[in-house]
Image 1: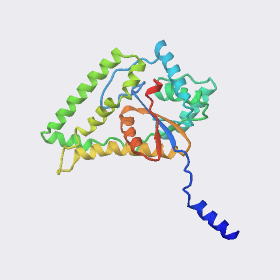
Image 2 (image 1 turned 45 degrees about the vertical axis):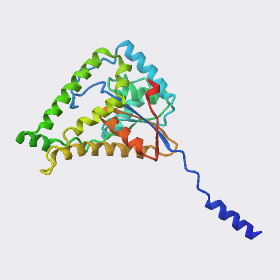
Image 3 (image 1 turned 180 degrees about the vertical axis):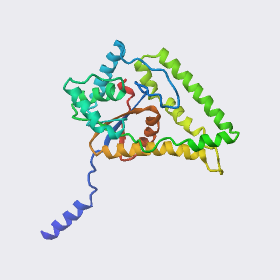
Image 4 (image 1 turned 60 degrees about the vertical axis):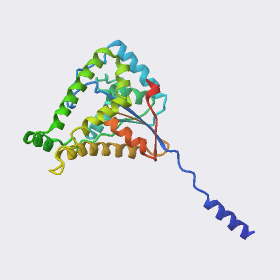
Length: 262
């Protein structure tokens, strides 16, 4: 009998263990509702307080809450974690009127409708796009890549202005999550990548600094997305375009497309 028991245990422990369900992560790109003007591409503000926009936000966030997120991660300075969550607590108690930023208009609404006690930052503010050396380099050299970069900025600015004039909030959010637009967004940073090759690599270092910030932001997502969690992440398209590429190749997390929720 003992021999059979040992054999049975040997078979049992040779079976692969059932892994926990991977976390599901939904990345939602946005334009900045309350634009601080810090992005490379300068844009006009879009009024999200119209009746139509507010009605859409209420319906959209209700659909997203049906995903049953266990966490809502937002793009704000992590040093403001206590401040933002005090505002969220006040909002739950009907003592805070939502500001114009997507943190509030999207993040707070989704978290409240999902019954979450708090929101959470996934942002990284220690590392930024470090392009100072790049701009100093182009002052001293004739760099055709910089001309192309400036042309791309002008094209993107013109296209964004036209989109804001012709699309409603639903259309703008779809655009902020369009794979073609994501690729254009990432390509903007690669346009200057070859500047200074074998002469300090100012272009590649500037591009790498932007990817470095986004790697840190993705690390914050990974840390929050424990097995079994359902995580909604909301950030500017300049970040989510890159973060989606990380999520796509990450075997530990399951990416959930947002397209069907619009």
